[in-house]
Length: 365
Figure 1 (cartoon, rainbow, N blue to C red):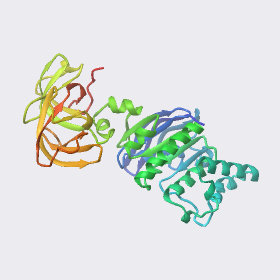
Figure 2 (cartoon, rainbow, N blue to C red; figure 1 turned 45 degrees about the vertical axis):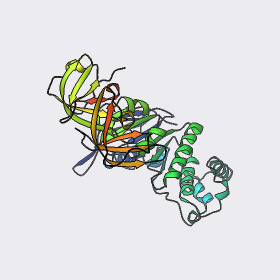
Figure 3 (cartoon, rainbow, N blue to C red; figure 1 turned 180 degrees about the vertical axis):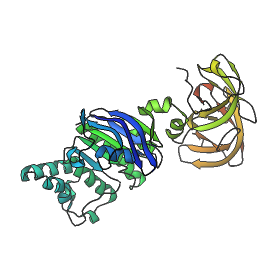
Figure 4 (cartoon, rainbow, N blue to C red; figure 1 turned 120 degrees about the vertical axis):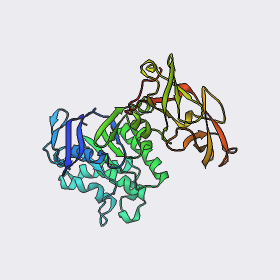
């Protein structure tokens, strides 16, 4: 196992800077997930750790040793990619054993490791099959097993579940979490799916345009996002944003004019630092809004879409100040119709406030 440290890592492709002065420490045995939109640099950063790309500046350290110029094979890591990359002419057994054969492992050791990996991944009955005879989930298990048999210092996963259907993704997330508990090996996992990040990670690294926006636990990112980007990326459905201006402040309460309709309010211990007329954005999570009720303040608007999910529904409302239709999650799945005019209760304590630069204002404890 290894603690992995990145010191001021930068990477360019031509004139494009894709990784910008990233410093990060992944503790020994930690499960860290890199998350962000397409093109944010998360896969490139993983490849720099693996040694598949050369860094332009900075250092990569494993347990304090500089491995920045070492070949991937010398770093003691194992990678699992989006594509399974299995040898189609080989059996599952031979696919699992291939790396150990190249390393000239003893026959008895090779066989023991392969069969133990197959047992852990519950593919013992598949060892004689060829990849074409396997389902997508089974192929991904073989790809993970090929990494396990090497007993690496760290596992690096590059969007390994994106080719699977929704049901298999859930199943494989559970299996990956179980494997981490069982082996305790350092794992770094890349995904654009924030649900995967929230359910798997010890800590999440949120990347945007090659920079680290915030590093924290899943729950802390959800409850205390550092800025508007993180707030809008973590959470499903994503956070609603209502743009407006400060009307006035009363103690820790901020009155916000959304541009049309009644003002809304939110609370922050930094209320005294705000001035009337200043631009401000109110962030509201779908699960905190109260459809058809009043709260500390109220927004009104027209329902433009309803997504019925069985036990709950997502209601989309065109409301004042909303940059997009507001999304409200509700358990009342039968009474809301498209075209209806509805009231939305906005609890003041549930709101997130962001200044004109997108930085989050502190929330009440």
